[in-house]
Image 1 (cartoon, rainbow, N blue to C red):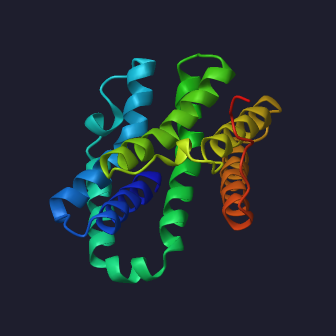
Image 2 (tube, one colour):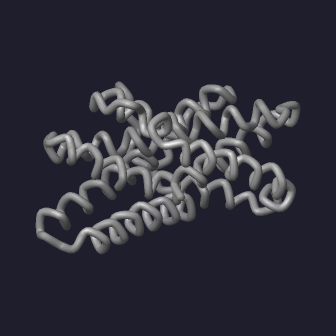
Image 3 (cartoon, rainbow, N blue to C red):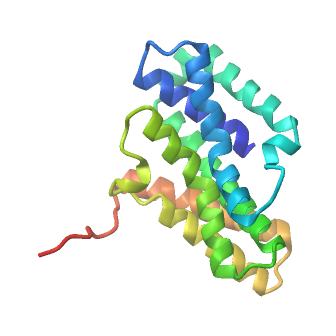
Length: 195
């Protein structure tokens, strides 16, 4: 589901930013958005083959996401908050799955949380860079911090031996809730600046 949502958000962002994008251009951005974070995580963990190379189902899911975004583009464009929804669902799912995969490699909880965050946000960073936008994590909006918080909640609940599916669901809901509140109330972290 995270892969599908990211493929859709990437294709929609590409088409909305530049109406000259053809299906290949929008599809390429959707593809990069969907696999970017997970690929970086797998490279850093030394997990080969990369997940989308080892399982062709990911390519089919990405293709379905791109086609859905293209076919329903006008409808989705009218629902401008849909992009936020797909992106939020994508980062929520990818954060927890990335954290879980990192833990399977026997690394510390702190590094696993960072791997979860990388999994969630790096596809969007690449997407925004390719469409010539400032990546969301470099704006004042709380984005990567929400992922770290969700990963921390997941790790804490796991340490307390809460059942895995409940940990997963609560962590995803924390990220979704934080993102919705941040956007609705324009909440941001303090600026980092010299006096």
